Each structure stands twice: as structure tokens, then as C-alpha cells.
Image 1 (tube, rainbow, N blue to C red):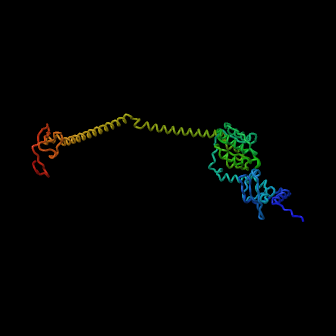
Image 2: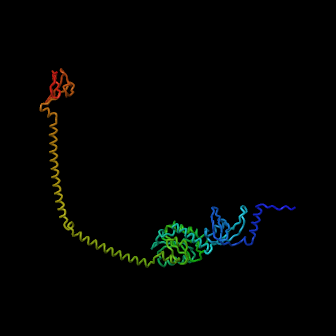
Image 3: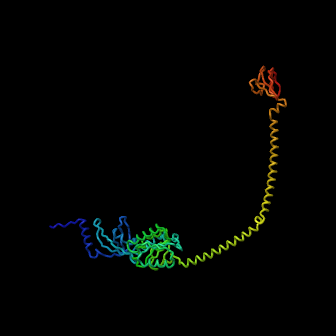
Length: 411
């Protein structure tokens, strides 16, 4: 009896994987569907599902292929994916390994353009409040473009024709290809660090969307926004619009138009100068006439026509003020003298000597202690009586004590 062959799970999965990868259809195919469950992993891989009304299929796009996408896939986006179907042996799940992706109804570059435009607009990079005014009479213009293209020749020719006095500095930069965006950013930073240009013209001639794509790069837009020098964007033809046009301080339809917007014709400057000179002459005449009128008025004023009269008037006023001041000083001195005499009389009246003149005396003990009560001395004590003109020494022969004004007893 022949025993049936038993397979492992891994053998089955590997067998199915080989069938899928060797299938003429599944090994290379285009699949159309709507993106759902999209996730951009930190590793750089993209995980999502493609679905339509009848079903769904899991998809993965590895980092190398994802980095080449000019746009970021989003849920709900209709796309056509190129890749192959295979089996992930560990889980037994089959999935579509995407290698390229294209939005349906819109090109990949156009989708990337719209996504970046919406993102930067939300951040305010296109707001008019941040737009700087282009100087009317620049002394130096920096041109960032290819040094060998037709655009730079047109710009130089127009600027020199309109105003030969303007200095032009060309900052060479790539304006097409993968390295162009980084080169434009470098040139913008170089011109800003140099700091001698009044305005920057950034541009190139016309081309396809692919040719102009470096001007749609986010790094270029942010470098334009960060520029301290006003930037005029002049990319392609009048119908061409790039992210640089929206971010710049001014958009020119063509490089030639940018040269005209950045300069003022020399003859126009001369006309402005002539008008300014005429206005200055009129202002000088008006100021001179006004000064003459004021001078004539000042000449006729009494202070200038009869100066000594003014001095005499002020002198009389000063004499009157001095007279009033002297009178006030005399009054105050007289008042002070009266007050001093009154105080002197009050002081004299309160003096002990004045009291003594009226017959009053003071008594002190032999030790010099002032006696103010009969209780402070005894019969037989020796005391000194002070009068107005001297002292008497005496001995107490007796004393009487008074209470409530009545003589009580003699001791």
C-alpha cells in the first residue's frame, strides 16, 4: 500500500509562490483600483490595499520604489499600479508588490504639484502679507539661471537697454534635471549671503512639466520664501505655472518680462528727476517767499523798529518791581521788629529777676538745695536767702505749716 505524501505548510506556500511568480500574467501586470488603508512606514515602505466594487488586494511598495514616486499616495486616490503578485510565505497571504504607480485621470507630476501647492498654501508661503515690494530703481540685479541658456541673454539685453547703469550678477545654476533643485537652493543662499543685490530674477525658458519640475520642488519654494532679497520668478512661458511662481514676491510671464519688471527705463528716470527738480524749485521759491514775508513782518515790529523803547519800558517795569519789593521788605522788617519787642517783653516779665524786684526771694539749704516747702527744713537749720542783689545767711527759729490756705500751727 502506497502511503500518501504529507507536505509541510512551508512547502505548500513555497509551491504556490513559485506558481504565482512564474505565471505569465501574475509576474508582470497593471492593476487599477482605489487606495485604502494606506500607511507610510518609518522604514520607507508603503503599505495599502487596492479595492474596487468586487474585491480588494493587499499591496506593498518597497522603499527604493516609493522614493521614486513624485507624489504621495492617499486614501481614496484612483491609481494604476504596475508590479507582480506573489505570496508572503510567513503568513500565507498573497499580495501585489507594486513597483510603479500612476494616478488615474491626472499625471503623477501633476498630482505631486497639486499636493505640494495645497501644503505650502496651508502653511502661508503664498500669502500676500509676506510678499516684499520689488525696488523701483535697483542698483544691482542677481540672475539665477543657466549661464548658457537663451533666458540669460534676453535678461541681460533688456536690462542693459532699459538702464545701462544697473549692475548684473549672474549666479549660475542648473535649471533642469535631478540635481537642479539643490543647485538653485545653493544659488539663492549664495546671493543672500553676498547681500549686495537689490532683487533676484530666478528663471529659465520654456519646456515640458518634466523640464520645469525643479521649480516645483519643496526645497526651492522654501529657499525663495526664506530669501531676504525680493525674488521675481520667471519660469517658462506665460501659460506655465510652477510652485516657485506662487512663492516668489512677483511672477513674470517670461524671463524677458522679469527684466522689464525689475528695471525702470533710464529715460523714465530722467523724466522723474526733471519733475523732482521742478518740484524742488517750486518748493524753494515758496519757502523763500515765505521767509521774505516773515522777515518784513519782523522788521516792522516795535522790538526791532524802536528797540530802545522796549528797553526803557522794561527798565521802568523793573524799577517799579524794585520799589514794590523794597516796600514789602520794609513792611516785613517792621513787623518782625514788633514781634521781637513783644517776645522780649514777655520774656522779661517771666524772668526770675523781675519777680525778685517785686520783693520775692528764694531759700536754699546750706548744701544749696532749693527749698519749696517748709517740710524741707527744720528749726535750727541754717539757710541762705537769695534776694535781687545778694544773699543772706540766717537760722530758722521756728516754722508754721499751712493747710488749705489756713495757718494750722507754729512749730
